[in-house]
Amino acid sequence: MFIETVVFGALVPFFLIVAAFYGWLTEFGEPVGFIGLLLLAGLAGLVAFFLAITARTIDARPEDDPLGTIESAAGEYGEFSPHSWWPFVLGLGAAIVFFGVAVGWWVSGVGAIVGAIGLVGLIFEFSRGQHAH
Image (cartoon, rainbow, N blue to C red; front, top):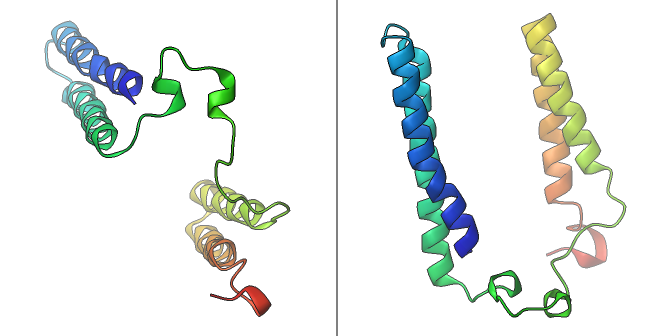
């Protein structure tokens, strides 16, 4: 995770320089962009800090080995549901929510309900019948 930490850590001074330059160009008369860029630098620093702490607690990944080969990353990456329709329902719920922002807030409520149904369905997809936990 060293590379990811360096990338996000390098974004912090970049966003600080861009914020200073933006503030100088606007003569600090428009504070929203300046403060937004400062917050963006803080967010990049937060992600870099999280990745640095996480890199200390987990073993090195195959991507972190400079002498690693493609075969060293082979194997299982997790358990994924093969033919699940629940991610589609979640995406449909998100689309309805954003559509409701443009059309009417009541449509966003319908989208939130559809999204909640999709989330519950995705979480409990394998928790019924013989394979219940």
